[in-house]
Amino acid sequence: MKAKIILLAVCSLALMFVAAYQMLVKPAESQLIDTVEDGVSRATALYKYINAAETLGRIRDAEEIAGRKELLDVFDPAAYASDPKETAQRVQVELNVINKFTDNSDVLFVTNVEGRVIARNLDNTMNGTNFKENLLINNAISGRSDEDIFEILGKRMKVVSVPVRKNGQIIGTYNSANIVDSEMAKSDFSNITEETNEEKGASALAFAFVETGKVLGSTLPPDLHEALKKFIEANPELVGKALTEEERKHAFTATLAGERFYANIAVHEHLGQEKQVCYVFLSSISKALLPLQTSRNNFIWFTLILIILGIIIALVIEEQAQAPISRFTEGMIEVIHGNRSFRFSNEAEGVEGQLNQNANMMIATLLGERIPDEKQVGEKLGQMKVGE
Image (cartoon, rainbow, N blue to C red; front, side, top):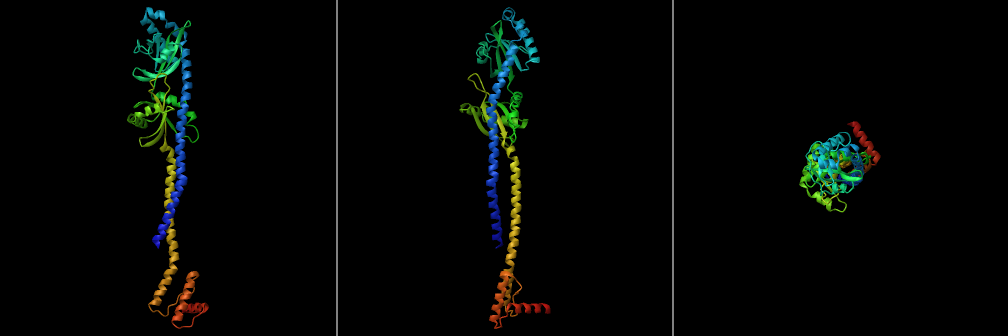
């Protein structure tokens, strides 16, 4: 009997726990995951427009620099034709000044109308490099300013190229390039922080630049950055999936250093057909669910306490319900063993009292005694107790 009562109590509370978990915890968990996914998707879409606006700003700044009198004075096609080395040195000096005070990009360089580099800031490593086949610089030579990502000096760079005009004629291009790395990732990401992370209830986001099998830079801390590098190296197909999907983005989940992330990878804007660089927004599902996991653990402990209390209460109730039956059974055993003087107590109440009264009447009938009424039995029992 006790085992059945305990089993019933445990099963009832277990069913209550499962029902509460399905109705309360599961929907809350699903809602938190949806919030993470929505935040990542929104940031992915938002970056495209913010980057376009930033690109326009960079182009305007570069066009202003390309029209500086100081640059035009040293960048003279006729002087370059007669003394290319001297002209290149003078242009380089001016680029160093621009780099120090106006445009702090990683690389500044100037090309002539054939797309050949005349000079770059700091050193001569790019002198003579021909960008004739480069779409971005060809556009600038044709009079169209724009931005693109391509490889310079073995590194992926985001390059702004604008025409340099002198006396109404295009004489070359001014180019401002920045390495696509963690520094750029942090700079670009800061532009959308106020629109995403600072929203009430929004999960923290991270940002990264990647290409096939390689992470170029990210805003992640070192341990997660290294984990992302290993993940991208192990999953080089992610860039291809982003390229083939209609919206040029692909959603995926990744476990980095034991932490589960939801992420979107999207193709960065490029001018040419060679679309190598993608950007990734990611947010930790594990951290988003952490408060819920704490509440869930508290709920589990609360349920365990309820189960223990339920078992104790069930045992107490069972004991109280079983005691009258046990006393009655003991009395019947006395009668069966021939104790003719034994009588059940009529002081008991409820069902036990009725059973005792009926049993006393049955014993009296069997022994041929006069059946006493309830009052007489009570008085007799009272006298017996006094005599004792």
